[in-house]
Image 1 (cartoon, rainbow, N blue to C red):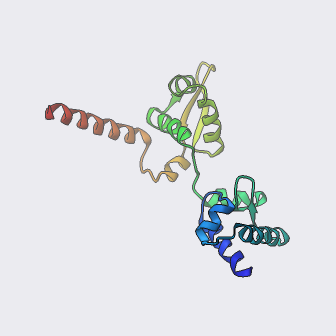
Image 2: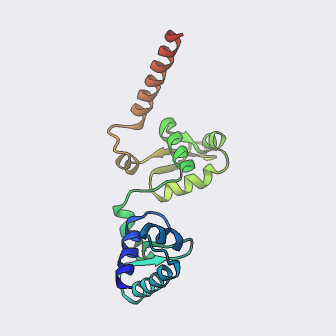
Length: 176
């Protein structure tokens, strides 16, 4: 049983997503799913009995994760993960900055407000009231540039992308 627990632990350590008992059994080539489940329950008890920073969460499958009280360390050390829709909103902000929040909502829809909140929490953008006080201006932060390993400002990046687009369009026209 100890050997199986160690192998399950290796699977959980290696994967980035929650796995079902059936998936873990398949990866480990264990035909008896109940045996895998029994070893998993023992492993969960082992983790919960010790005062470490890790735990096995079993809400949507099994995954090894850092306990909530230690997440501040993870956030400092690990890159930010963004959902594709939030990443698209961030791209619009980066390419059109400074952009008014109302304009962003028109471009990305009402879910843009949720994306803005997440990006503010992750300190990838900043928000400042515009001159008339009716909306906010959004722009990327130094943390954004560091995260995406950008040198210079995003306006330079936007100009570069625009020139690349013009070049591609020009070549498509000349090919016809």
